[in-house]
Length: 237
Image (cartoon, rainbow, N blue to C red; front, side):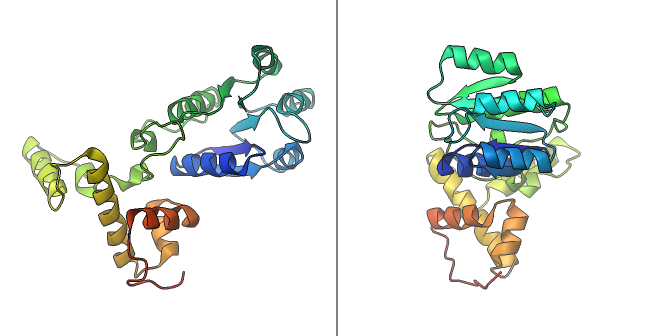
């Protein structure tokens, strides 16, 4: 897990990047302008910063230069913008930015840039199943919201033989109609997945959020999207 700072004056961008990176297992802090970014950098050490170029108080390139001059550019910085010119991107790279992402940022490019940045910082996690394999790239960076931990348990348990793998696969398929479009089959699995955890945790949203690795607001939105009955066995917490 890495500590990542996201700096962007657009609330929607901050929330979306935070959800994606949290689902990847990272710890994320948010700043909506350069002032908050300075405060966050002074208070904490980050493994990576995602920095918007155009902000209302101080632009991202100027902030990057401040950090470089003050000796605070000790982490990889990925610049983001939907209006930057090539000259701006070159200038940011010359100052010390690791890379540049043009908005709208596709999920695939975001995850790749973050992975490369963390690898450069020497803080990339050991190779493992990643939530990036669950997401499907779309222009709005949406798709399946299940983290990697949502894999079917019987499929990730150690198996000692081909027969064991075959039995596990059959077990995983039981109760699901696989003869339908992928999106419908995935939604069916996700609904069953969340209903299982809700029932097991007695409807406690706090514990379900912890078990599934989703932030509570994100979890509520996902459950409503899937049509999960929140009234049944629901309780506070």
